[in-house]
Length: 275
Ligand code: SIN
Image 1 (tube, protein in one colour):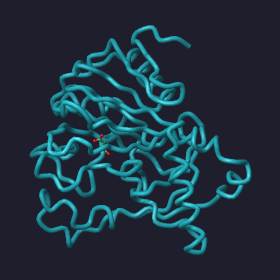
Image 2 (tube, helix red, strand yellow; image 1 turned 90 degrees about the vertical axis):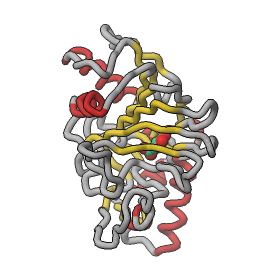
Image 3 (cartoon, protein in one colour; image 1 turned 30 degrees about the vertical axis):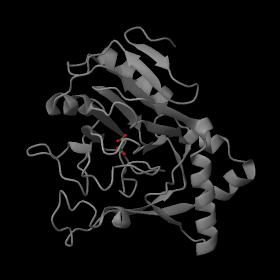
């Protein structure tokens, strides 16, 4: 089916498309929303150029897709708890998303998707990679698909979040970070595609397996998911937006621009329990 109201230009055959003809800061008609939603389902991550989003318009766009989530560890700017600052400069000791992950997969109901708007980019570097998890699942052998069928894994935010954000949160000793069990292979609630749902940031162990076996299977799956065949690499420009379906892709931010500045904001849309 073709698109009538927006232009959709795939970046690879498997994942990622650039969308043209939409001003995300303006209220969106239902007809345009339906096409943007379809593009997201078909391409798993969609990119927009030359947008001007303030916190209100950013949140309003996110809310077209569902209720917004509040990050369990990182506070938003004053009055905007749903806004997640994404910022790196010469003082940074870490950046968000330096390893492959699906956002906050340690939540019992991990996000549907995330919308990242970057207004400031280094002159070069700072790309984001996205990897299609249904392509990764499809490429497994039938024997491995059978082995993984029905397995669940423990996802935990503790080791990722505890004590990490001392620049933003003085003391997190009273906090309890999310932890949840999810199927290793989830069925996408909208497209029906099977997607691998384990990642090196949050997935601690495959339940019911001996530790060595779990470690080796997870490490094989992480290596498999990082295969460039399933990926798209997004080159940011100032005022670009990337909107990814967190159920269908993992992503990785590359920190190859230190000490330069890369800065913007993300909103995250609530999702449902993986099945
Ligand atoms: C994230 O994991 O949300 C950060 C992605 C990026 O900065 O490119």
